[in-house]
Image (cartoon, rainbow, N blue to C red; front, side, top):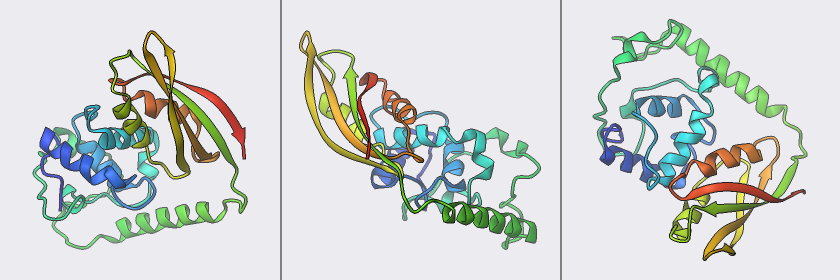
Length: 225
């Protein structure tokens, strides 16, 4: 398993294809697997790798709390599609990890007791948090106006980038192109979100990250369901 060399265009292409139908590297919530792959990248993927860029911007928003995400970091070669070998060069700062980080590269093949305890505590805390969620889920219907830079912007590609944003609690709906003026059209797209998981500020940050296509995003309508 692996992505090849994540510091090269070829490796990033493998990552982009891997994330075409996935929100995260493993499972359905951000975890240490996402942090491990994120930290291996040299920077943000290019705009044409819309799935990888969407994932990168989403995981970037968790940097302040990355140490509390569930799971345990594993070597890069244990993530990604089967049949691809990891060849990503180790980052120079790898030896400067915080003292409380879990070392998975020691000579022992099994996790030590402290590592297991940390993993179990994080999983227990995450499961406890999920179990306390109310049965009634508050949702909203949002209509977004996404504006391109000019009349030469590929609107089909712009919409593809927007729809590539996949998050827990987000469901995209119908869309249409509306004239703005001077031959320019904007994308108007509907979505339904779970209020405690997805906010308009978060959507704006992720959508405008596709800066090669998107000039701005506005909320045209917002209704509680």
